[in-house]
Length: 347
Image (cartoon, rainbow, N blue to C red):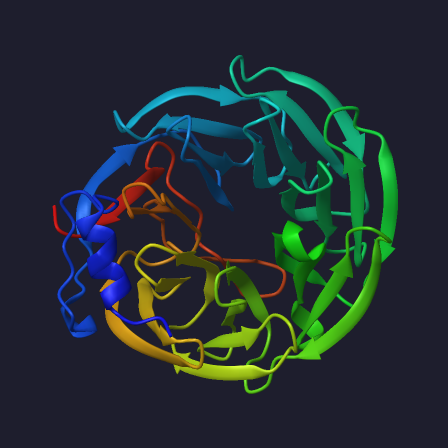
């Protein structure tokens, strides 16, 4: 059974460095460490950490901004990624991948030079993207196409197109079990994909959760964490599909992350909060902090080395009214205000 002693043991081994958590989860306290200015114009979506190269990849409209997370400074960009949503990293191959929603393609780029080597045709509006280490394949989850495109990470050759029951959101890979788990947002279910046959082998309801977007995975205890649109974080058994626990979160969740060393699960929400819960046991979650961030800072990445979390944010203008309909348009990010917020604890 996982308890807070695992956290203390990690400290004793030096895994957490200067971070020392007491036995009481209520004392977990993340706080703002710094802001990394990025600038530019337009919106954003996913962020991804390469913990080995110490880089953070941040989607930004038609490019991916690359940040050195040891120096907290922008060091480059991956260009020509129209409508980029997600970024996946294959460190051993030296390759990265992006899902470009506006052109229905995925880019393959070199992690050192950041140059794009090729593009792969996908289904309509590729959103989330992941790299499956087990078979060295990349999956794009195509929102409007209601499908997943699978291609060889090195050659870009499309291996399969997997029909899905609805709109896919985020997904995680478990190579040991030859499984990929994907949220089907509009069906309130999780699709289980066999990576050998490229077929959906199970679909699991997520009740009491609804409209799940973010997903994270604890491979040790075989637990999935789902950030749900009805203000719940749901914990699910990845072998049976049984929902074993849930806790309340904020409004407008997008990303969900899990830190194996600390046993902490995070849901970042558009209402300007991150709910942090501890996996007390494989069947129990406890909220230990509701972190105040910034409105619309709902996408997030986690660095397993430092246990810091990164959220994209910007300043926004006032909502405008459409002359033809009289309806309010969402406010746009103010030019030059785009940034990354860095949160940590024990610093």
